[in-house]
Picture (cartoon, rainbow, N blue to C red):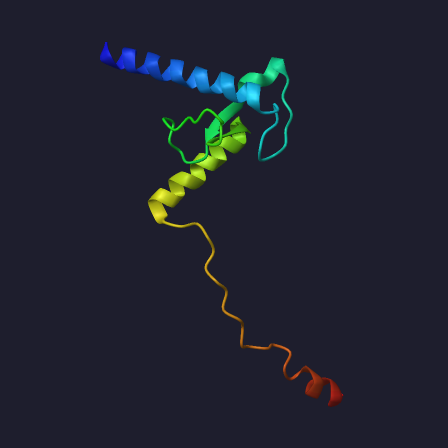
Length: 110
């Protein structure tokens, strides 16, 4: 029974910030730009930028509206970050090999 009560509490909290976010922001996915109308609004989700569902400031600064697909992608990136560390690319080292270094000499020999 405690699980049902906790689940119910979470669903109420979620519905509260979802309603507020839908009133604050245009019904457009913040990633792909897909527009939503009332008939497909269930596919637009509230994403917590810091991944903390308890962080719900009144100004909505921790939220962004994302479609189901973009929301899933954001959580996949976060999950990979947790498992494997930063997903930022490392700085590229400049190449020192020039495959065309001898090209001029080869062309002049013909």
